Image 1 (cartoon, rainbow, N blue to C red):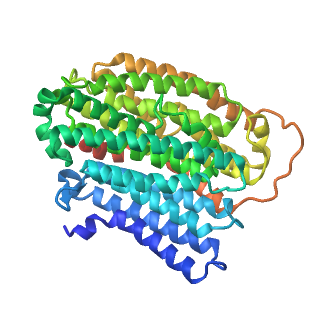
Image 2: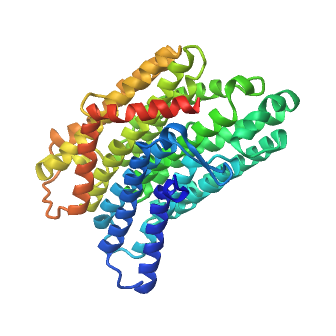
Image 3: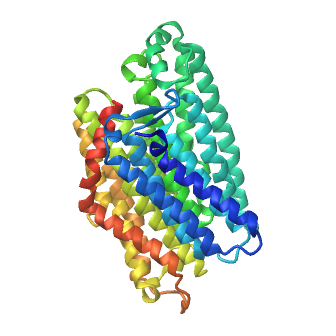
Amino acid sequence: MNEWLLLAPVGAFVLAALALFVIDTISPEKTDGGLLAGVATIGALAALASSGVLLLSDVATGGVELFGGQLVVDGMSLLFTFIFGSVTALVTLASIDYIRGMAHQAEYYLLVLLAATGMSLMASANSLALVFISLELASLPSYALVAYLKGNRGSVEGALKYFLIGALSSSILVYGISLVYASTGSLLLVDVAGSIGGAADSYPGVLGVGVLMIIAGFAFKTAAVPFHFWAPDAYEGAPAPVAAFLSSASKAAGFVVAFRVLLVAFPIQDVASAVDWVLAFQILAVLTMTVGNFAAATQENVKRMLAYSSIGHAGYVLIGLAALTNVGGMSAEATVLGASMLHLLVYGFMNTGAFLFVALVEHWEVGRTFEDYNGLAREAPLACVAMTVFMFSLAGLPVGGGFVSKYYLFAGAVGAGVWWLALVGAINSALSLYYYSRVVKAVWIEEPAEPRIIERYPTALYVALLSAAVVTVLLLPGLLVFDGAAFDAAAALL
């Protein structure tokens, strides 16, 4: 297949970004926000559609290397690019109403598309050098997006924390890559794997420290404990659509690059004598899901609760790496790893939708606490039905795809011989039902502190919100459409 066709998903993001640049150059002061959002949304939908078509082709089964092995297009990269396209389309569509009347709208959509481009390259990166470059391409626009509300102190403060911790984590990651290069003599993941056995015997300390530093860099990107401190402040201060984008797409990008680097370059059976990264991820998984859920349960700010909730979900996904103990065999490992991918797919819709509901409430200037949400269902019943779907699906109840993805994940962990990880995950899911149900109780049952009348019902934001809700519900049975692709991608990686 022509290489340009294989790069169509990434190319769709790039072309849409270039189109926005040209439009803004022609009329920087008079550009219509709807036109900018339309171009960005069409580009994201094109990336979604092209990745979906390629996912059904032979490319997803065998995988194709490009540019001397620097990039690889396979089932996993296409599945995650599908996620990035979906989240980006929802976010850009919802942003029409959210940033209406604000300055620098072209730059806003341009930054979203450039970040999505970096995330798509992260999914295909087959070299440690390209891993770092694509991660920075995704991160730098994200810092600016968090600070988009320049007159808002929380936005600037969150962006500053995000940038400082991000710069530190990037330096740790690139230093870890340099140590791996020093011990193996290569940056291509396959070549690193070929040299890993000798490096583990000759330079176990250098290699071990290098792998641990790379893991730390990935842990920051996925907001895993104890590298999560930036996430609550960044998500709370950022525009709500940006928080949706970062907590869903950016998190998925961190995981996909971690899956490929660790499984291709550092097979646990070859590198265990230098560093047992499976044990490291078991510790990270338990800490992340527990700290994230307990912190979310103590919050009074809904947006901050969702931020900690996203940390808890990162802990669930980490089970996919923490369960690779080789106890249950290749089939069990492919199941649990594929389940992690499926959970990220569903999470992309239900978590994005939850943050878009917050965006809707912010658009109405209602407030951010649970008490402020009291009685919202009287004025916006359809939106509150969608939020109820998101909350219960995030908790793992059988109203959306989150139930199926969590079932696959916990069942896969049991099959892989780490039943205790599944138990910790189930306990944390039960805890999460408490704080998710607080939102549902507030909007449907509680009485508002004072009467309110909502007169503006933003069309684009509503369409994005309801679309996410419909897909979340449809994924309850519809996840069977994607499970084959996810499990096949996981098996090919292993």
